[in-house]
Length: 150
Image 1 (cartoon, one colour):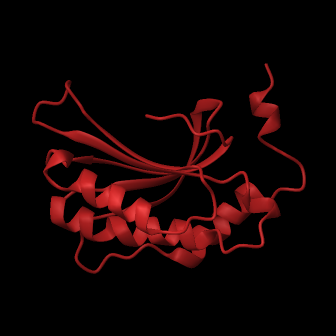
Image 2: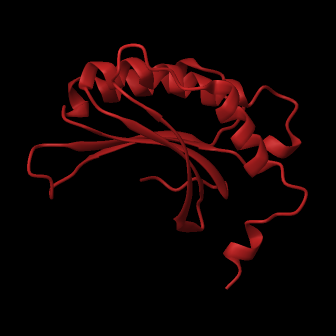
Image 3: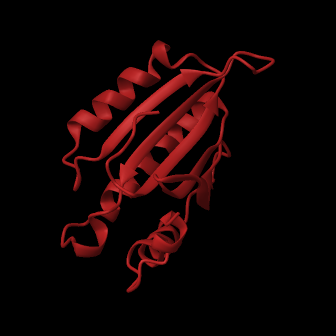
């Protein structure tokens, strides 16, 4: 997975049963290139999972969030766009994506925020997702700095 320069990161991570080279990788890159993001810290990555009993690939979107606390831009529109892009992908590939908040310096630390499933009528509660991300990114004190000290 490419490293983001940001400490706070929104990740959408899933395991798909179809080789991303068959179309998802190109769709994801076109999606990223076609959008004006509020940050330059955005990526898509995928890789095969060799230890799986059946062929599977991990697919991940990452969005840096360090700019959120001081941004006047609609940063959450970026998060919502990723969610809206992945909802049909989850249905098409019959998989699930986990939406998480992470600290890039501490890969073991993550907060699961929501799931994108392949259920036909399933929707992510965007208002709740926004509220959780605002809480995690706009603390008066950097609560996560205690985690990053060694």
